[in-house]
Length: 279
Image 1: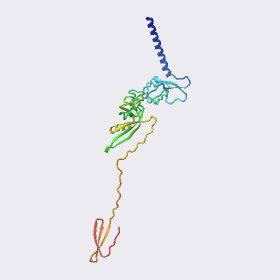
Image 2: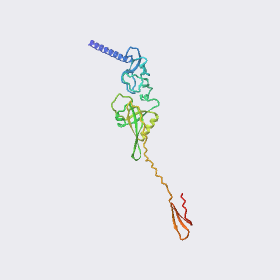
Image 3: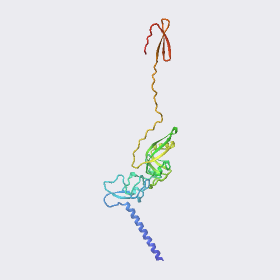
Image 4: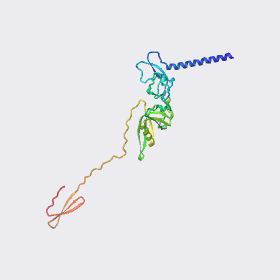
């Protein structure tokens, strides 16, 4: 009985040591250069690294890169990436560049992802405003604002374009590609854009539109249509003074002449024939 127990203990010990040895070799295989040829060590992603996730040693490895062709900002030491956060998603084999990761300085990971001189602003959404749940961190959107006006009319305009989505609900990183209906979306904006968004939220309703990741073109904003009716100038009417001269003979030698100018009327007595002076 004791011999059988000892045998089982020995087998378990051998299996445990073997598992530890294999795990250690697996980690070292991702840290050491993939080949012994001459080249520069460069850190690349060994697995998918989602946007907003802390980079771990198991997710990266070192490969030999042709000398003189090393990407600018690439890391040679994987230990320099420990604890950093991915600002963009990485695919297996993709070189990890310094500009695409950020150092975690404390607080939430979301605060580290926000670019300098920008702010994170959260807006409430539903299944329609949130593009039926297809919004994920890292997407880019346009923001439309609809406001009501007099006589039951409303107007819609694009107030912000090419805005980065930092988080949906309380998730700043996700590896899912299925639609998830959320209640809030956090966007990355400048202080001026944040003020415009908050103002539009209080004045009317918002709608988010999903952009293609490769589409960075900004559409010119259309001018607002003037609701006032065009002013029609009244035709100029020239006022003419109609002058009529009426001759009336009297028994005397004198001649009475009635002169009518507009609404005024006067009588003039002359001996000779009247002379009409045209004005």
